[in-house]
Amino acid sequence: SDQAPAIRARPDTITMLGDLPMKLLKALTGVAGAIALTTGSAFADDLRWKMPVAFATNLPGLGSPAAWVADNLTTASDGSIQVRVYEPGKLVPPFDILQSVSDGKVSAGYTWIGYDQGKVPA
Image 1 (cartoon, helix red, strand yellow):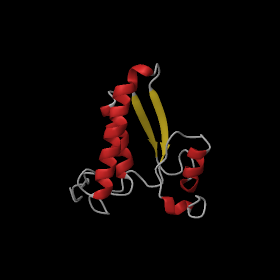
Image 2: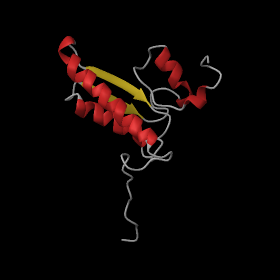
Image 3: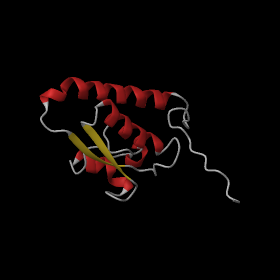
Image 4: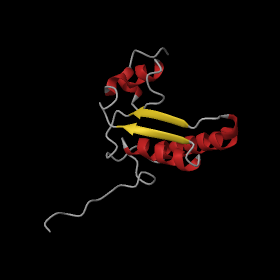
């Protein structure tokens, strides 16, 4: 075949901004997982969240961390937390993610705060 083999970046090793963002995501996933595991008996229902993203999940460093966090929350919580990732524009417009979370239309969102410059008080 004339096609070059597909190269898939591993979100746990490649980031566009160095190691800090991925370390932060791993820490947040661990904390969320620990909370889910320790408080699981306090909740009768599992958590099912819809999470729109501003960047396609196939973009290493921009979109891939959102899918990585969603997968790891499900794993760490033994399935009691499930985050369904919606590609840009499928659930809400990318520039409306922060407002949609603020209004309670969606439970979570993955965006860049720069898109909402001037909307968030200092």
